[in-house]
Image (cartoon, rainbow over all chains, first blue to last red; front, side, top):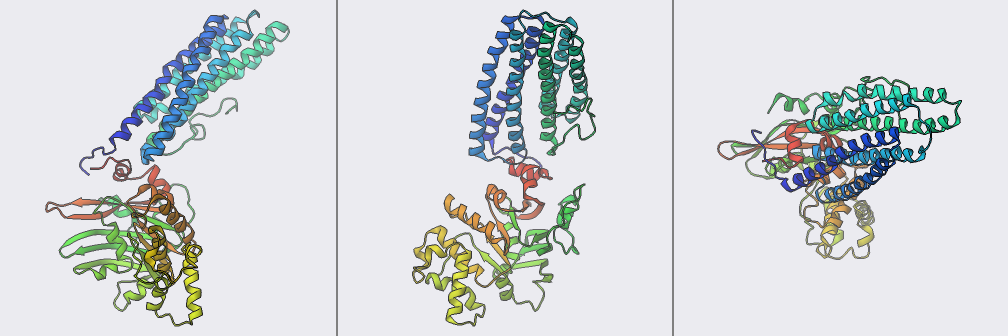
Amino acid sequence: MSHTHDINVHFHGELDALERKVLGVVDRAERMVEMAVRSVTTGDLDLAEEVIGMDDEIDRTYFEVHQEWTNLMARFQPLGSDLRKMAVLLQLNITFERMGDQCVNIAKTTRFNDGLPRVERICDQIREMGDLVRPMIRTAVDAYVRSDVDEARLLPAMDQPVDRLNANMYKETVAVSDNKLLLEWATKMMMVSRALERIGDQAVDFAEHAAYLVTGERADFDEKGMAPAVDGNTD
Amino acid sequence: MTPERTRVASQPNDTEGRAEVASTGATAMPLPPPAAMRTVSVDVHYGDFRAVKDVSLGFARNEITALIGPSGCGKSTMLRCLNRMNDLIPAARVRGEVFFNDRNIYDPGVDPVEVRRKVGMVFQKPNPFSKSIYENVAWGAKINGFKGSKKDMDDLVERALTRAALWGEVKDKLGESGYSLSGGQQQRLCIARAVAPSPEVLLMDEPCSALDPIATLRIEELMLDLKEDYTIIIVTHNMQQAARVSDMTAFFNVDLDGQGHRTGYLVEFSPTAQLFTSPREKDTEDYITGRFG
C-alpha cells in the first residue's frame, strides 16, 4: 500500500487525549517523589501535608482515566497496536496511582518520625535513592513517548543501585539498634527505603510496557538477562 | 505480492495445512491439528479478470477459521471455491488445487454435489424454503439420497435441529412454515439444514450480517459448540466477531489495477489472538486499526 489514511479519526483523537491525561500525571508524580523525600529527610511536616494533598489529584485522574478507558473500550473495541496501547495505558494509570500512594506513605512517615532523633547517613542514603528513582521515571516516559526500546532497556541497570541501597538499609538500621529512639526512627526509614525501591520497580514495569507497545511482545527485562537481580529481592 | 506474503501459506506438500504457522516461532508450538481442507496457489478468474490470486491456506479440523478483509478482497469468492459453488457462476474459473481429505475437489471425476454434501454452506441472508420447518431440514438429507424410514427421518430432523440449538423452540410447530420464524431462528434453521447431511466442513458467508446483536450472539455461541463436530470457515466483515469466535484468521487485501479491476490476495494467516493484537504485517495492522485507504 503506497499510503494510508486514518478512517478511525474519532477513536484515535480520543485515544490520544486519554494518553495525554495518563502521562500528564508523570510530572506530578516525579515532583511528589522529590518533595516526599525532602520532607522525610528534613522532618518538614508542612511539606509532608502538601504531598499528601497532591495525591488527591492523582487519585481523581486515576478514576477519570478508568472511566474514559472503559467508555473507549465499549464504544470502539480497538484492535492491533490500538489495543496494545489501551492495555498499556490502563496499566500505566495503575502504576502512577501507586507511585502517588508510595509518596504518601513516605510523607506520612515524616509525621510518625516527628520529634525523633535522625541519622544523617541514613538521610543521605534516602536522598540518593530519591535522586536515582526520579530519572528512572523520566527515562521510562521518554522511552514510551519516543517508542524507543533501547532507552526502555536502560531501566533495569538504573534500578540496580536502588535495589543495592535498599538492601543496605537493613544494615544501617541494625547499626543504630542500641539506641531505642534511633532504632524506632530507622525502622520507619526502612519503609521509606522500601517505598522508593517499589517506585523504581514501577518505573521498570513502565519501561517494559513501553517496549511491549513497540514490539508487541511481553518481555520481563530481568528474565531476559539484561539486569541480573542484585539482592534476590525481585518483587 | 511480496515474497513474504507468498511464504505465509504456500506449502504445496504441507499435509498439516498450517504447519507454516507453527514453524515461524522461535519456541516450539504444539503441532497443529490435521487440516480438513487446504488450498494451494488458488487463482479465481471471472472471465478475463483475476478476482483472487495465489491463495494457499490450511483449515485445521475442528477449528474455526475466519476470512476477513475489505470489500472486494475476494474472501467470499475464496469461500465459494471450497465447495465448488463458483461452478454455478458463468465465466468463473478456478486454478490451483483445493484439497479436501487430501483429494483435489477440482479433479475430473469428483462429483460437485458430493463435495457440497461434505462441505455445507450457510449464507449471509437466512434463506429457508417456502416449506415447513420439518421439510426445510429433511430436504438436505433427501437430495443427498436419504433412504431411511419416516422414523429415521424424524430422528435426523430432531438431531439436526438440536445441533442447531433450535429444537426446543420449534419441536411443537414442525409443520409451520420456515418463514414463520424470526431472522435468527431462520438462520439456525439454515444451519440445521446444512448439518442434516452430516457434512465435515461448514462454510459460513457473513452468517450474522442480517441479524440483531442477540441473534448474532446465539449464532456465535452455536458456532463455538459446532466446532466440536465440524470444521468451520467463516467470512465476516465484523472483526470483533472474527476475534470472538475464530481460532485462526486470514486477512485478505485488494490490489486495484489501472482499469479499476480489484484482485484479492492473502496478506497474513495467523492465530486469531496474534493477528488482532500483534499482527505480523503492516497492512493487517493498518486495516484492523482503521488506518486503511
